[in-house]
Length: 258
Image (cartoon, rainbow, N blue to C red; front, side, top):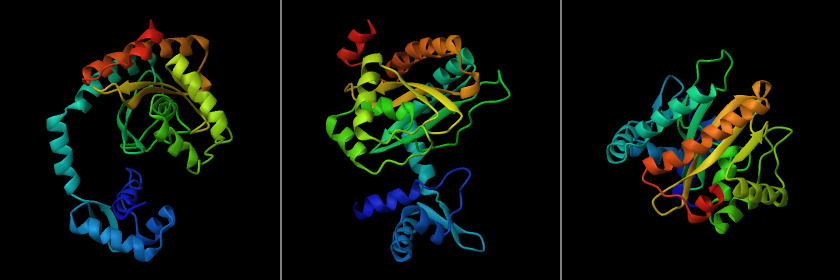
């Protein structure tokens, strides 16, 4: 991993629930020594991507992200389009709907919408990182990505997040083949023990998979009728969102759908 990649990887540890992170904690999370982390964070701070706050001089994300986010949204108002589709999907299924996009080799949540039909629901955080091997969204991305990308993802150390998380590359490849055939991924208690998710891939103008749209429900609420409804709603929402984002479905995907 190069210097730039190492520096950017440190930014993935920030979240809404962990907006301030100290040097020692960043070192622990990343597995890098303190001297390296301090050097990388100092460089990020000089460019405005992080800043220090509080008595402990902990790090938080800097103002440079506001400018970049504004420029991105002005050029591609993707989040607004996404939220409209997610709102309809959440209302139709009664569950949490979300979209994640691939950024390099990281799958990050772009937007999510909660349904208010139930008091108990799956909750998310802004810019959540979704493991490729342990989420339905990640499995979708892997299923419709280039072989080299899949090989690199499955050759990395795969974390077993729950008792149900599959980390065997051979078994994961078999799962990916099923996802390609069904054009939909299903994950039960693989990322979080009490969450049941379904997802379908999203494609760009070159017909390359760029992310996924998903519905997440508590395991306790899932039954055959609910599952069928979620799958039906996703089969409508996923191709529609791909088109709204300026993308095109691959020919093989359209043939299988037909």
